[in-house]
Amino acid sequence: MSAVIKEPAPADQRTLVSLRHLNKHYGNFAAVDDISLDIQDGEFLTFLGSSGSGKSTTLSMLAGFEQPSSGEILVNGQSLVNVPPHKRDIGMVFQRYSLFPHLSVRDNIAFPLAIRKLASAEREKRVDAMLKLVQLDQFAHRRPAQLSGGQQQRVAIARALVYEPRILLMDEPLGALDKKLREDLQDELRQLHRRLGITIVYVTHDQEEAMRLSQRIAIFSHGKIVGLGSGYDLYQNPPNAFVASFLGNSNFLKLKAQSNAVATFEGKPLAIRPTANLQTEQDLLLMIRPEKALALSPAQAQLEPLPSGWNEVTATVTEMLFLGESQTCSVVTATGTAMTVKALSASGMPLQAGDAVCVRWASADACVYTQWTESDLNKAAGAH
Image (cartoon, rainbow, N blue to C red; front, side):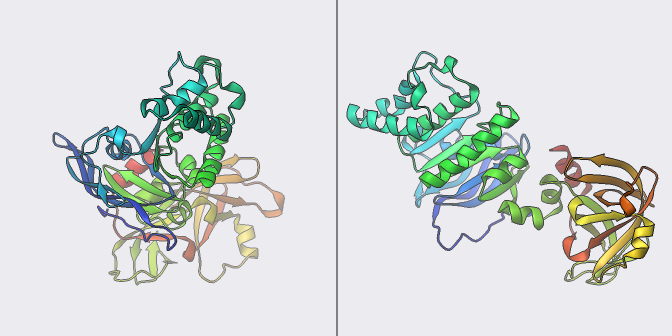
């Protein structure tokens, strides 16, 4: 895996935050390992990874709660490494709301302005604007204990935004909420970001949350950024096998290269995406998303000739799973490779465990990897 992954910034944005060769060591353990990253002004960037991947430590160094072992943190070209947290002009929202239980909603939101000694009239004006923004006008005089979890989190967000920081950092802020409330607040956060245009750096281990919220996602593993891009790009064309396994569901087939566009699987030739510099019999890993592969009964496969540029392997159904709007089919090939695919039944008859099927996919839809380890795949699979 590459230590540094960079993606060109959109032409209409400028870099606000730059992390340069950032490291954080605890003894011999590298929690953050030589990270370089540019964060654009006004973007919503999510750090995604499992526990211990380095995402929260990186966020803590940006906030000023952790001191880097080495490297640089720049905002608008100015170093923040020796600037204390309260002077960084950065807002922070945690999973634990950390509200003052004895203060009202209004006073909780006003607190950052009070300690900055903002004039009373300006303070009231900003608090009123924040209450309206997070739709808590009617709850201004309640205490935190009188609010729901979602309302408390909105207060925490308003408190972080009220002094108009350039950057808002959020560390798993919705992790303690139930699924429906979490999704509602995700929608609110997206709308809030669009209205304010503030730069948000968000930490989560939830890949669906990262996809719903972010303009770009940085995927962390063992202190490094191993994938960086939009959710769409990372899902459709993962840069490596770890990202392919970590983000979404994947099928992996181990092949032997025969040319730059042909490989063998279970002794049968398959078409692959043209891949430069392959050696004959070189080990390859093919990744196919479940929704890109289709299981047909042998009878239906006979009626529908294999399209040009498509591959077909035979397999046996092990399980059918009905999911309402779709159904998935678990199969195993002759050599024991397990796959999850879409099912297409002939004459309306559903496939059943034990049925023979033909699994098809377009070669253009399958990613080819020349470098990977079993450890990478196991670590990614275990991180879900």
